[in-house]
Image 1 (cartoon, rainbow, N blue to C red):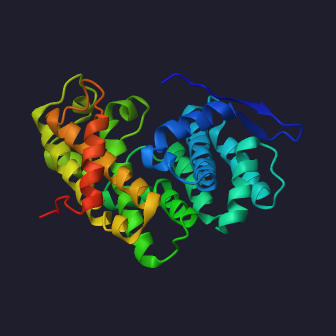
Image 2 (image 1 turned 90 degrees about the vertical axis):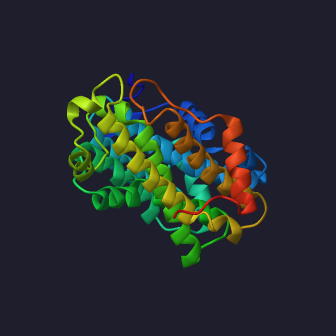
Length: 295
C-alpha cells in the first residue's frame, strides 16, 4: 500500500497528521454510503458523514502515515477534545464537533476508535477469537453505536444487535484482506484457528490458497455470517431510511461472504468483491425478513 500521509510539526512540537481532508471525506462517503444512506435527510446524512470521516481519518493515521503514528494519534485525541469543546481547527473535527453537539454522544466511542489504531501499532497477531472480538469492540462496534445515536436509538436491545452486525462486518473485512494485512505485518486470523487447521505463515504468503487455508476460511466465513444474522433483527426495530440503510450494511456483508464462497475461499490470489446486484438482493432479503438463520 502506498503511503498517502506524512506529518508536520505544530509550533508546540506536537505532530499533526498531514492528511488531506477532502480525500478522507471522499473515501468515507464512497465506502460507507449505500443507496439508502443517500436518501436520508440532509442533516442526518451530514452527521453520518462527519462520523465516518473521523473514523476514516483515524484509520489513515494508523495505517498510512509515514510519521510517528502513536504521537499523531495523541494529537487526534487532543483535537477530538477540542472538537467536543467547540474549539477544533481541523475541518474534519470542526464538522465532528457540530455532530456531537447535535446528537449528544460522549467521547468514549471516538476514543475507542483511536485506541484501536493505537493497538494496531503494538499488536500484530491475536491468539484467540476472544482477543479478536475484543479488538472489534474497539475498532468496529463504536461506529455502529454512533450511527444508532444519529438515528435516535440508545436502547440496549438495539446496541446489542448493532454490535453483532459491526463485529461481523469487521470480520468480513479482515477475512477478505488476509493477504494485504499479512504484507502489512498484521494477521487477524486467530492463532488458535491457524493451528487447528494446520495453516502456516507460508500459506498466508502464498499466491493461491492451499486446501488447509480454504478449510480455515470456510470456518471463519461461517462465524462472520452467524454474527451478521444474529444482528439482523435490528432492521425490524428501525423504520424508514434508517431501516433500509442498516439492511444494506447487513446485505453487503452477507453478499461479500457469498463472493468468498464462490471463489472457493481463495482470498489470496486476487481481490474478491460482491456485485452491486448481489448486495441489493441480500439487502432486500434482510428487509423482508426472509434471510436464512444460522443452524
